[in-house]
Length: 114
Length: 115
Image (cartoon, rainbow over all chains, first blue to last red; front, side, top):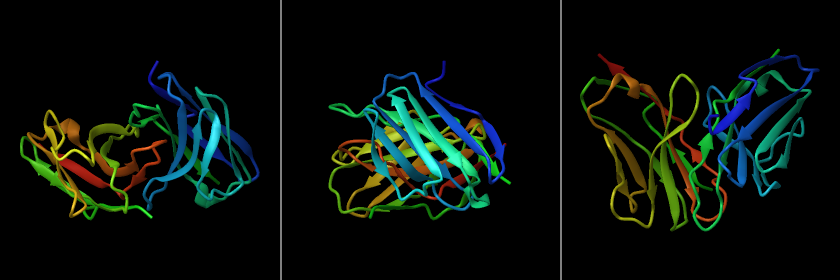
């Protein structure tokens, strides 16, 4: 198993669809993150979960709804998206504590909204 | 707010040569981490090198080294003996030391290796 696994790798959805992105980490970390990578913009932090509690919401529209049922799994629920939401969505995890680790990333989900 | 700037959208280098990628950042914090991440076509962000701001010594990892100038808020990456597998997008990133790794990224530099 790779450290951080994201599914699906590719997703095409209509603006009225509801879909979910899944992230799983096998590193024993206690923090998980969602980032958005658009074609013309730097990677943007969307959400942070620390010990399953959401500690950061970077002014993300409510059509993106994160869920962290345990420290190993993170979801991003999508509904009523817009074409400008098309991007690469990257999940990451890290250990937060006395000895912080760097963030480890998954391979991302390429989302296309049509 | 913290910002990270990479002023070179694209760079190219001959195989076996040395190349330097530039990064500047802005922060009012005194303790922080700086990173260089590599993103190959597989899309996974891979950590190349990390620098703690409180360390004066520049970090090195095999063929990769940094030139960290804290006063100038500059953090460049030098790749020696460039290899074809080094071709990728390179991102400079910043985060504070305490707490979660809330990374602030630069715009990226696309590095091409010419055989």
